[in-house]
Image (cartoon, rainbow, N blue to C red):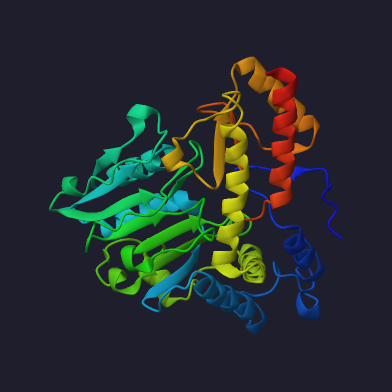
Length: 366
């Protein structure tokens, strides 16, 4: 059986908590899959045994997110950071520009990578208020020669999230980095053309990146790039062009089963909203002892960022939290403070325990 201590509460920003039930299933079957005598990591990725895992995971992803047939699902490597480069390599012609909505460090990195490949510009930004809110879509600022618009749906460092992805861009292709909130809520497929996400927040371990891309988009992609960096290559090869990360894909499939058991995407959205509501209520009713970083209209349901009255109190809060078994509550090194990442795999009961600790700490130090 999985031996993770019941007194450990994992709030890491990523790689993040996996449900105990998933770890137990993996432990029971991953190392001798269907009594084949082979672990998932050993079997040939061309074998019927692995193809069952591979195509099963793809079908489960499509089912959970209700992905229309006009989209391909790719399982790639390199994390979301590789997508920062693959997107402009495939879809940014020399005579066009890419527009980026700037909401934090990850959109900054995506824009920087795009500019190393072609022309790209900031459509709007919330940097002037320290990324405490998401930016205005600035639809009127879209230039005529824009190839696509890039959005980061959730911002792990600053604790902000789009309440709803913009729908005002019409026929303009919209690409979404959903690394930290994919599989946490439904996606409106009528208003996006490409969604990508590293799996290590809400969908399994690190090592696999899910890319969901409109098929007709690939027909217009740049053909003059290395095959390994072309989306069409991986779509034609069913994400088996090169050896895939078999163990991570197996875990992705288990996570899709777990989501289905918890009411599918709507069921997990409801659970996530309850977790976030409980934690934000603690912050809002603390009389300023805990102060959220994000404005209320931009708050993330995945990453709750907050500060205490002084850096000394923050340090003491984190020390005491660690002693109580709370892991990963440090804010990102670039902004400090505190952060609780409450992804799919974090149980409601763990959030409740954190709130109880926060109330106790406030009572003792306010």
